[in-house]
Every structure is written in C-alpha cells, then in structure tokens.
Image (tube, rainbow, N blue to C red; front, top):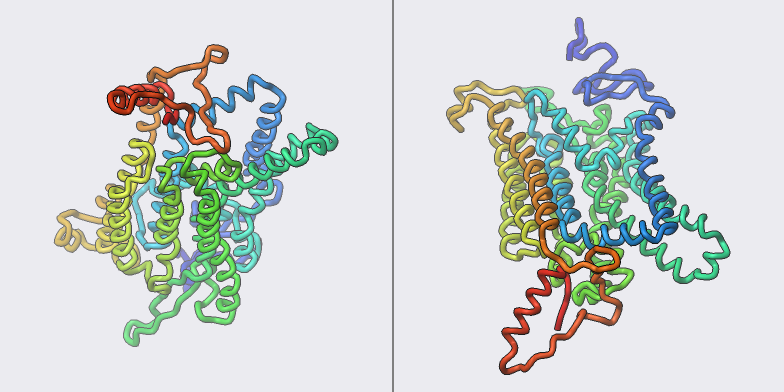
Length: 497
C-alpha cells in the first residue's frame, strides 16, 4: 500500500498484504506498520535486560530469605497469610485469563478495530497480561530466520525461561550453602529444590500456554484472497509468512512441527496439570500438607476443595476460545461470523456452569469471574456487530446500512463500546483488590504476641484439624457451632472439629 507506478506496495515491501520485507535484514514492525532493520544482539539485550534483572532479583531474594531469619519470617507471613487473605493470586489469574482471550479478537476472529488508540490499548493489555515475557513477536521473531526456526523458538522459549528462573531461584542459594552443606542434607534439600522447580514450571506453563498455543497455530492459520470475482477463484496464504501458499510443499513441511507443538502445549500441558492434581487430590481435598500439593497450590488454591480440578476446565475454555477455534473454517474463518457465534455461545454456556457450580472459595473471586465472562460474551457480541458494519476490506460500510441493522451510524461506535468493556475489566479489578486490602486491614484477627502477625495455619501431614471443641451433644451443638464460626472470623482458615 502506498506504492508508485505498477507497484501496489510501498518500496521495500511485498506480499499479498505488503507485510513481507524485501531485504532479509529487515522485519515488519506491526506497531509502526513498516519494515525496519532487525535489532542487533546488543540492542535486544538492552531492550529486555530488565527481565533478567527480575530473575536475578528472585534468586537474590531467596538468598536473603535464607540469610535473615527476620526476613524469612516476614516473607513467610506475606505469602502464607497476607496474600491468601487478600486473594490477589486468584484475581490476577482471572485478569490474565480475560485479556489473553480478549487479545484474540483480531487474529482469531477477524474483528478489525480501526479506532485511534486501539493499538496502544492492546500493547498496554499485553504488557499487563505478561505477554511481553512469552511472545517472541516482541523479540522480533521474523529476524530469527525462516518460519520453521521461528516455530521452534515459539515452542521452546518458555523452557528457556523456566530454566533461567530455576537457576536463579535454586542455584544461587545452593552456591551459598556450598557442596558440603548440601551433601549433609542432600535428601531434604533435593525435596525442597524439586518443589521449587515444579512450582516455577507450573506458573510459567500456566502463564504462557495461551500465547505459545496461538503461536503454534500460526502454522495452520491461513487467509484466502479472491483472485477472480467472476470465476470465484481464491488463493490462501499463511498469515505468519505471507510468502507461503497454503497447501504448497513448504506449507506441508511445517505440519509435523505444528503437530509436535500442538501435542506438547495445547494438549500436553492441560493433561499434565490434571494428572498432577489427581495425584495430589487426597491432600488437596483434606487440606493436608504435602510437597506436591504445596507445589501445585497455584492451580487449586482459589477453589473449593472438591473442585480442585476447575483450573483445568478454565484452561480448556481459554484454549478453545484462543486456539482451537482456528480449526473452524481454517482458511476464511476470520472473515466470517461462525467463530464469533461459537465463542459467544461457548462463553455463555461456561458462564451458566460457573454460576451453577460456584467453584471459588472466595465470594469476591466468584463475582469477578462472573463479571469477566459476562464482559467477554458482550465483547464477542460487539465483534459480530463490528464485522456486520465493516466490509471485507475492514472499512466501515455506509452509515445507512449499519443504522438499518443496529440503529447506529458506524462500526466505530460499537468498537468504542468493546474498548470500554475491556478497560472496565481492569478498573473493576483495581477496585476489588483495593477494597480487599482495605477490608482485610480492618478485620479483627488474632495475632501472635512475639511477632504481631497472624499465625500460620498450615496443617502437617497426617492432620486434618487444628483443634477439637468438646461439648454435650444434646444441648451444646448450637453453642459449639457459634464458637467455631467466631474463631473462623478471628483466624481465617482454622479448621476445628
């Protein structure tokens, strides 16, 4: 677009969408919509150096945690008492899941939003949803070489991040203690290290799963273009590389790599989560302490004991909306309404099941999850209206036609509603977290005299309750239940028989 003479593309650009750079040393920058020079290794290191600083800080924090008994007590109180009381982890997971699906409106469902500022809004969403860590697009993946090399990078990048995290979190304290000290307590330290490794792997796999799965599906995502209006001839090209025709030998060569990534991430990770949760189900249901259950707390900590598996169901929901939907009308599904219709129907059904099951242990998490899915369903409905009010080229149709369907002048009005809904989710999350922090600070609780903090109520292995309240069965049941409920208000999480 913007070419001179017989050229349809701006100089230096080629391909059916003018998004292929003629020079191999350049990549197409989607943020500026033009070809720019590939960054050097030093530039990439400077751009993402703060990621490694964060990883180093994690390792240094663990080292300080072991050096200082007071810091150890403070950090244990923060992670065991303060965070569960606020419920921040569950709220962040709901927020992350919402925006990981919200970000698929354009690439998966073909909702072309041409409102000024929407691109900047999406960049902010990806930053808040931590996709800057896991999405190689921000690492200028087109500079890595052909599409096969890029797909291998998309599949293996989270493993490199997990290894870096584990090295910083485990190796630094191990170097401090030394080989001899580690040999004296080899079995105990190995168990602690394995718990840390499993916990880090679960968190990274959960956070990057939708993004990596979307990148894996780039080997299947095609877009068709009409070659002859009279004969109806079309040609499909791979969206990840507009030089490759779908169905060609180069396209077929990518399919083994796609199926390997598909089995490893969209299929393997949820099955791995479910297998681990089933292995620890007895300890999770009875709330008994075990290393496996503790390492998997990120997956089950926000749900009712009997519904510890709900995170696997929610993960499959995200994958269906963000990835599996690409199997529907592979070549031209993004130009039609079927995907949006199925997404709206699926989100509504999930919302009904969520309201019926009520799997969350906290009421505010349940309300936030219901609101997030309701906003998501409304966004998909808005996407249907946007596609009806835009033509095949992404431009708004005549205001008369859009007004005849919806009573509005153009698609921009509906797009504004979709953006407002997406921003409202962030605002609601901020308000809920602030409210919980203020409320938890004002709640009267029992605190320890020597530390001034709430007691840690983790149960050791083999124990199911913190105490037993003896009473006369015939006349003291109501009084005993009242005492237990009052103790649970003063000590959240206490279990009394």
